Amino acid sequence: DWSSDVCSSDLPAVIAAQHSAPTIVNNTYNTAPATDNSALEQSIARLNDKLDEPLGAIVTVAGDYGIERAKGEYEQLMRNKSPKSKR
Image (cartoon, rainbow, N blue to C red):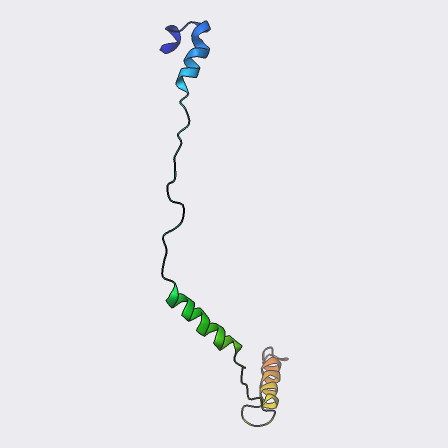
């Protein structure tokens, strides 16, 4: 036990001796290594060009793929989801 070997007047000196100086690390790297991003830049440029193109859509009111038929099918599904009478 170290407390029996040290008198109370020496205690601050012992505590001070136990603390070490802070460690300083010098980073010698000023910049990150240069990387070739040309392929990435080309890909982003192509994606930006695609985003600038207009979006085409064909909308029909009547017919097999028309809004009226889709609306009718939706209304029928909503009517059939909960039957009014149980047999």
